[in-house]
Image (cartoon, rainbow, N blue to C red):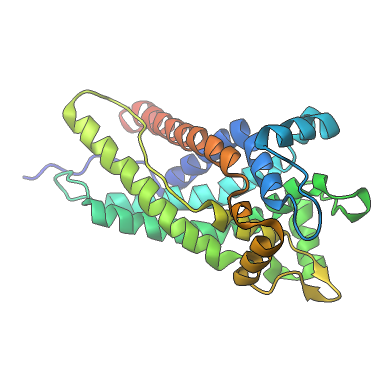
Length: 293
């Protein structure tokens, strides 16, 4: 008689742990997210570029807005993780286990990438409203006082966006966000699972973190500009991503497409590492104290 599959945590626990892991990581890297968003919006329109470098941006924010200022938008960052990361990691874990054979053999790398793409797309759709709120909240401090939106927290932001601009505005930039998430999660989640499998099979590790991720910095700039745009004389500031590209290159220069590169990649490693470390440890503890009891 074939051995039964080992016990696994319930679906709700998988989703819960995914979200908590991402939220825990966000607490540590939120200042870098703020700097990245400010850098990508710096010099927008005819306004002179506010920040010369990422360090200049960080010190300017600290000087003008204080220590609390670098955590502006934290509530939106946490909600984004509670929606996007909860969904993508939960769906990935569930599909991964469904495609694992009865003898414990995991799916091949191609299937892992496909699962990652599916999880990423769905997660991005669910997380877009929080992403829009995050972009706007982190951008507010760079505006003159009379032009600031002044959202009190992420829920106030979501309520006001819905009331003042319509519910569809919450999903502004959703399609490119999903496209980006497909690429990111195909690389990140599949690489993580494949590397973990190889190192565990080697016997050299019991638990580990390893993952790969590559994504386009200028796509993030497009998303930031679109999600932060205002209505001017009843018309949106940009019609589409192509117009953002043309105007950014024309008015701010070609290399402006890479604004925010340094804080983005400085944030990328710690956030990804911390997310998977937290996730692995929660799964290990749950297995030890719940499943194996």
